[in-house]
Length: 255
Figure (spheres, rainbow, N blue to C red):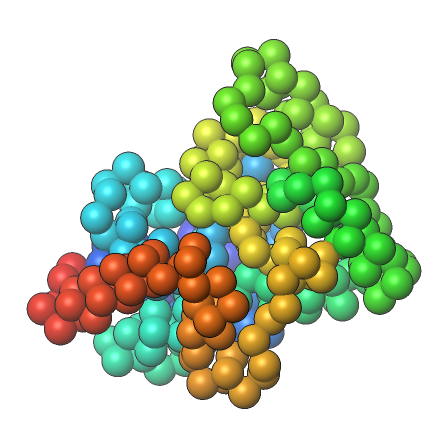
């Protein structure tokens, strides 16, 4: 969908970071914009890309195409937003998926928009449901679903699509982890009626499974470091390789 030709004036401008087109915006502006246009964006998807996924996109054309096929890509990483500011987009700020979720929950706790949570594990979804019901009792949640971990048949896929569409949810929060969730959203573009948003670890944070970094570390752009200290065995190699490549690509001026 060509959003510009549909006369949506905001968010026209994009900043290319290693070939991925990011929207230079702020967290509040992003949430307000999406809330305003969510129904016009039905069938589309939104990505939140951090250093790790941006570097993967730079190296893997197929994944880069998945990101660029999204309605919008927001910079879910302080270094990505800093890169954008350095290249002339002074208003660019980090738009973290978990923060975006929380702001959207707050704005729609009156039931003005409906939500569906697709992804993660049954345990995480149970914690998420409990926390949302306590904090946002007026939130219109149409369902929670943890899909099979492996491949699904075409019939199973159609059944999941039907479930999502019959729920009537305006927003489909997708928590499958990158790059799986981007692949899933790209494949289901226009097949799922709601607006899909790939928020990965957002399910874990709001479900109480994983603790977020202290606010001061988030503001300093060090949330990645906090997560590394919390889970070094899983994240060390991933962060070190992609962070180093991000710095290298920045220094050599990779397009």
